Amino acid sequence: MTPLMPRLTIAIPTLNRAELVDRAIKSALAQTSPDIEIIVSDNGSTDETPAVIERYVKRGLPALRTFRHSATIPVAQHSEFVLAQVRSEFILPLSDDDFLEPEFVAEILAAFDRHPESAFVYTGCAVHYEDVQVPALVGPPLETGADFLANHYAGKREVCWCACVVRVQDLREIGPLPDGRVLGDMFYWTKLAFKGPVGCVPRVLSHYILFRPNKNDNISHGTSPLVWASESRLLADEVIEALDRAGASPEYVSNLKTASTRHIARSTANQFVWTRIRGASRPDALKWSVDCRPYLAWTFPAVSRLGAAVILPRKVLRNELLKGAARLAASRRGK
Image (cartoon, rainbow, N blue to C red; front, side):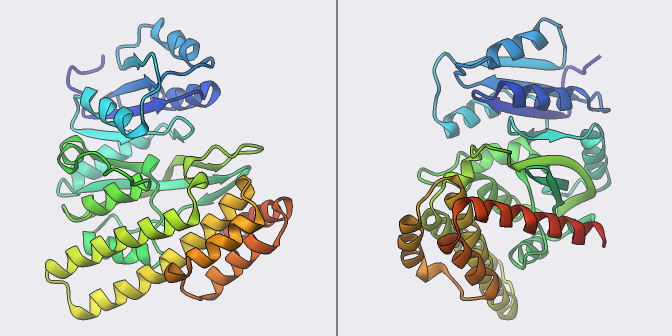
């Protein structure tokens, strides 16, 4: 029987993704740990999503609570609504297109039990590029928040929000995503990293659907490279300033500035690729390349990806992306 006060909530906001939310709910219900509740909130779907959710409601599952909005509300407002319904200590915000392995919750709660001082805990994650699964880079069972941030900007940590469990109270204290921000996941875990050490379960226990066959509906893919670059720079500057105020050494701060500049250049170049595959024109990409110059470090990874995004036809660019993902997956599996 589900406890009256579960330890962890799997929160699934959804909108017009009937088939995908069905998979997400199934993966939540398949958890080996009974110490959970599952919240599914439909943000005004007009497809078969309500019928999918109703099938689970009719089963009378004690761990499942559902909500439906008659009209679609802004994403940030919907997230705040879902958070307000949570009764547990911990929360996993699970996008409706992502899903979990059955041991996810049990492993996460065990990690918090071993290290209750953790600000948050994340697991290994399979990042899906159509049929290719690339294992994300992870860290040790526990590292300081400062080390975690430094390793993230150095390209040694790849954190997916669908693999992160955080304390509900911490999210409430941080508050909603500020107006105009779009990089919500990174906004929250950069704030959380200042609250304590970061825990990790290295097993791949979560699945992040980055790129679906014949679909371009990942929200981040539609963000313009200029918005991506400017907000990434803002987040990095906030992190650097906070660490500087906290007494980080000048050498650490200097290294972090260099690493963050390279990270922003790489991720912005990636965003050029995503927006082009999604449908942006070459003239759009050329204009953005001029607008983004203040944020681009002219390293080989950034230049090569930016050049490919501007020059290659969309179909060729997609094929090259999938080939690169396959090579990366093979190299990481071989380690």
